[in-house]
Image 1 (cartoon, rainbow, N blue to C red):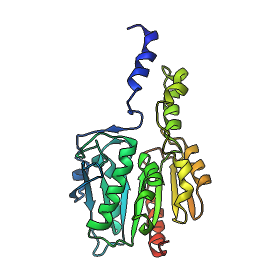
Image 2 (cartoon, one colour):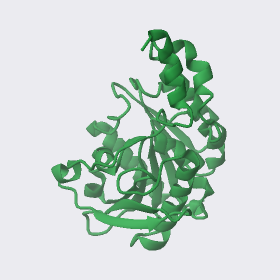
Image 3 (tube, rainbow, N blue to C red):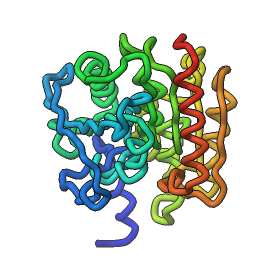
Image 4 (spheres, helix red, strand yellow):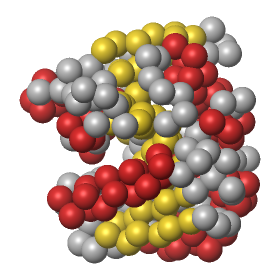
Length: 280
């Protein structure tokens, strides 16, 4: 193949494709078993009648302080993303996390509009089917999950019952993230603008984040994030309305923000205050 044809083939490969956004994996990894995490399989259907799979991980304490509804990032599935939050049940918090359509054991193929429907279906399941205190639920979204927490969760009829939103490593715009990814590769650097316009910008977190108010929102970002630049988190914080907080975690990248014990303690303190506050 002639090298000057490579950008053309890359361009054709992007048409009708969203691999810059979604990188699902069906294979499950033994990470939960390695961590000694007991989880319960849950299945539920979305508006398209696709069967979605999730895990409920109950608090190991006698009574749960609250429930974390976790929206994971764009790659792999729940089995790998559990590594970030497996420790929360040991501190009194339930976790419910699920795979979007096309991920893990969930049926279908990932689309941005479809993922928004999936989040609504999962929220309905959390608030109507799980054995939890429905007044103590916080949404935590990482990367793509953070974007969905901003744009998808408010569409749910159960959003008024949510105690707060936490987003980690989230971005301002799908098209901007695609452009930055293309900019980082020498082969597509010159084509970053036309190629990025193949990515929908129908759901822009930067446009929607102000509507989260008066729900409290915490924006967390790793200072050394090489996947989603820190500027995204800063701009999201500026666009958000009060009450809001912004944590920049030194020496942390895109997927290891919660590895440090000090950050975990700060998050536990934040959650405790959040659940003590009345739901707006």
